[in-house]
Image (cartoon, rainbow, N blue to C red):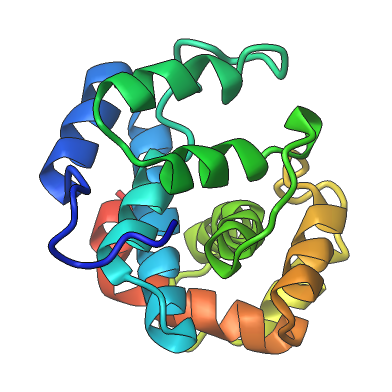
Length: 191
């Protein structure tokens, strides 16, 4: 099923309400905004519905604060998404972004969500240690930081590499796309 503009998608306001009802930690909200921005960028690049892709990115970790274990997240959130009227393509994409669920990534939106999740967190971490933030950030500097295991140690480097591969883009290109998507919302991400 492909959701298109004007369909029964609850929309960005509903996604924001669901996110902020379940998430209070500023870092988690910032991460959701970053993944939303990257997903909207990839929707434009890959011909997806920007609203659907963006809302999927915004909601991908909405249940993490309440269900912070691999046994619970994101599976515990799926029924809540369905109850709130989110289409199955959004629910499936959110389930597939977490490798431990075993839910296969089958669509470009699902592959983009997986590819953007870890990389967004990492790119924001890099921007936080740079005096100029996102301005002038290049894929080369991000890749250099990726080689430092102690920097943003919680980010799974293998998933960053695998995400770009599954998306079918060069890692440098993927990093550049994410940097470009996050720069305009830097005020929401670096505060």
